[in-house]
Length: 169
Image 1 (tube, helix red, strand yellow):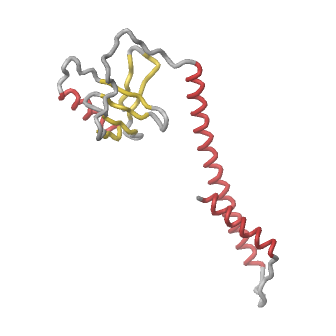
Image 2: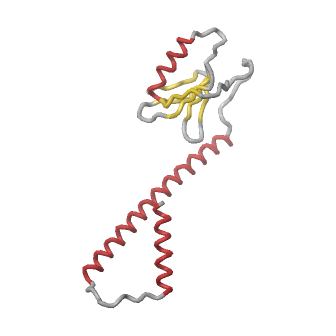
Image 3: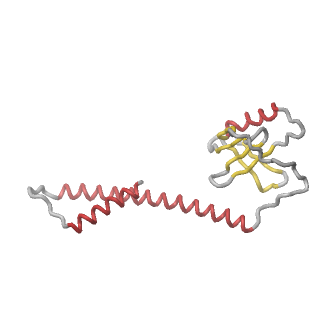
């Protein structure tokens, strides 16, 4: 496990782990984008103004490669196109951004819970139908004449079958 920490922002960290590899894209010679989750990412800029040798960058890439899905972008697009203004600072996220991040996290959890619930309901429904089928087959005796089902019941059965197929997908 590798943990990125930032001395200016102690609360902000990023962890790379061999068990949970996430994408990392090299945008140009010294700009990297690390994906945190499906909606969040952060950029890492290695300052090459001091003529850092390519061996240092290659060493960095060889260290992070086993911990992420490392790809080099086919287009060279630098994150920092302009000179860095040392007077500019970035503060921690404001209240609205924090509320938005919490809300997106809850929506993601709700989606996962809903999908799990649908899978469980489908599983229980299928096993219940199979139990009923086995019970009815064991209790019923074969009849020579065909069973007559009203058009209304046939329509309801067709709709139930289509609904069952939609839930399974």
